Image (tube, rainbow, N blue to C red):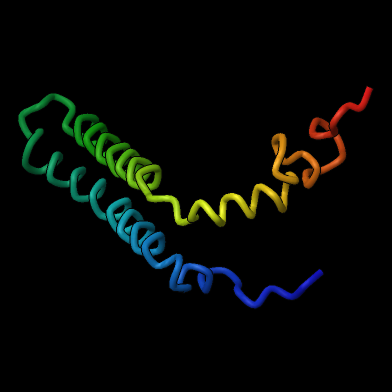
Length: 117
């Protein structure tokens, strides 16, 4: 097995991964701060007149948590593909001989095993 020169967070600091690291950092920061802020603002400002302000504030915090997660997922799926058509063709040839679904390079055990009968 070849030694791995890049471990853990070092992968995020490579040039091709910086935009991903930035998105992950922003999402992590928002995930930590927004629900807590929403909870306290809801508890002490918005829902003071409600019968159960704790419940309403918790619901608001959950809502903000889900909004951060949804925003991260949408931004992740909105990323442009970094491969050129030439690179895609080369990968297709390398892993599939330019034909089929690339099963020739896949694993040969379990559910991934290709039947030959």
